[in-house]
Image (tube, rainbow, N blue to C red):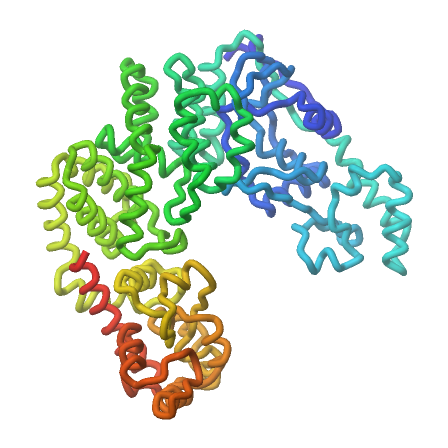
Length: 584
C-alpha cells in the first residue's frame, strides 16, 4: 500500500486514555471480542512501565462503518487493529469493566508493588497486603494528587524509603507519558481494503482463526446483508449465554427492527444451559450442514469468490435453520434424552457440533422425528466414545458430512463406524484403558454419568434424589476411597481422582462420610439397613442399598484393596456404558 494512504504517529498513553474516555476512538464490527487474559493485561502494563515496545494501533477516519452494538461511527477514529491493547488500557488504568468471551462484564484489576517494582493480577491476599497498591487505576483516577498517594502508602508501610517509593509510584503514574505508535489510514480507503489490512496484520504473530476471518468478512459485506448475519451470530451466542442481556441488546435499534433479531429474541426466555455455542461452533454447523464441508477455511475462500452473493444467500438460509427456535430446542431435548443435562458434560464440543449438523440435515429431508432422535443420540455418543474429532477434526468432519446425504446413508455409515470403532476389542481392551484415567471432567466419566441419568439413577446412597436432580441443584463428587484415607495407605496422589473412584452424591451425605474408610462406612450402611437407622442418606433396607450400589457399579467385597477395587469397578462401568450406548 503506498505511503500516501497512511501515516505513522506517536501518541502518549494519556492521549489514548482521553480518546477512550471521550469515545473518540471506537471499535468497528470487524473486531474480535476481548480475549486477553488478566495475566496478559498485567504483562502489557509491565511492558509500558519498563518502556518496552508494545506494538501499534491502527485507526481509520471513517463515519459510516458499523460499530460493535450496531451504531454507525460519527467519531474521528475507528479502531481497526489494537482492540486488545486499547481495552487493556481502559480496564487496568481507567478501572472500567470489559465484556469477556463469555459475555460477562469483568473487572480486570492490576496491582503494583513499589518496593519490588512488580505487577500482578490482584487477588484477595494482595488486596489485604498493604505493601501492594492493589488497584493501579486509583493512581490514574485519583483527585488527591501524587504526593498524597505516596504519603498514604508510606503511612501504611512503616520503614519504607519515602523517596524511593515516591520515585516508583511516580514512574507508574508517568506511564501516561509513554508513547504508542498509531498508524492512521487514509479516509478514502474502502471497507474491503480495511478488512484486508486487518487480516494481513493479524496473519503474522498470533493468527486469527478461520472463524475470525469469516466474521470480519461478514461485517464488511453489507451489500449482501453480511453485517446482519454477523450480528445475528454474535447476538445469538450472547443471548444463549446471558439471556438477561436482551434489554441491553435491544438498544441496538438498527438490528432490533430487523427480521434477524425477531428470529433470535426467543432466547430472552431461554434458560437451558446445556448447549451454549460460541460463534466458531455456530459457523462450523451453519457451513457444514449447508455446504457439506467441514473446513472453515473453505468458507473464507467462498466469501471472496465469484459466487459470493450465492454463498451469502445459502449461509443466511442455513443460519436461519440453526437459530430456529424449534430446531434448537429439539436438538437440546435430544442431548438431554441421552442423559447430557448440563453444559459441564459437553466438553467434546466438536462431537456436539457434528450432532447438530446431522440433526439439521435430517430435518431438511423431513425424516421421521423419532428416527432423527435415535440417529443423533447415537451419533453424538459414538463420536465421544471413539474420540472421533480428536485428530484432524476438520478433515474428519468433511468426510462425515459427505456421508450424511440421506437417512439411509447415515444409517449405513453409522453402522460401519460402530463395526470399526465399537467392536468387542474396543470394549474389552481399548476402552478399559481409556477409563483408567483421572478427573471428574473426563469425557468418559461424563458418558458414564449420562448413562446413569438416562436410567433415572438415584444419587449415591440417595433414596429419592436422582443424579439429574443433583445436576439441577447442589451435587458433590465423592471419592469412594476418600483422599485422606488413600494418603494413609501411601497411594500416589495422582491416583486419588481416578474416575473409577468417583460418584455423584448429595452434599448432606458426602459431609458425614468425610474421610471414613470404605470398609467402615459400608459396614455402617449394612448395620443401618438391619436396624432401620441409616447413618447416611435415607436408604434403610438391604434391597434398596444393593440396587443403589449396583446402579453406581460398586463391586462387592474389595474395599480393602484400592487397586483391585478400581480394576473391578472399571469393568462394571464399561459394561454399563456399553449397554447404554446400544440402548440409544
